[in-house]
Image 1 (tube, helix red, strand yellow):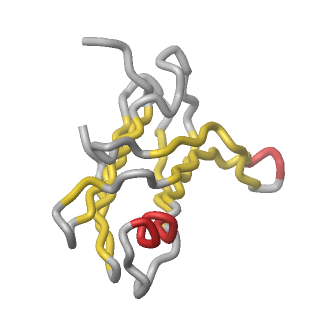
Image 2 (image 1 turned 90 degrees about the horizontal axis):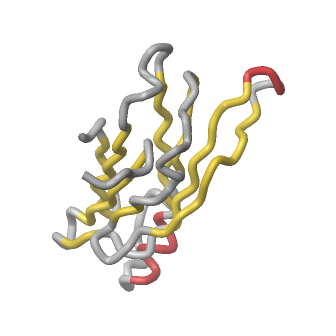
Length: 122
């Protein structure tokens, strides 16, 4: 298997039954040493399958901490002609526990105009 980013994501538009294409994504880590500010790690754009596979370089070593992934869903809804939606962006906050830094973290987002669901994927 080819090397992959230690953190990946996938957007599925469950209301239309299609991948969420061209969704801007931002990954940050909480810096507790700097008054709990968020530090940027990476940005990306979902591909035609709704995925951002290369968010981080495969050699990037995760550190234990709190991470935040922001999906700019308003851009997506505008691109598919949906003008009525509830979440202009979705932020998923998750933790990489001490001792789990070498694991892979996949963050799926199942999206509709008025709701979303997420879970830890594989």
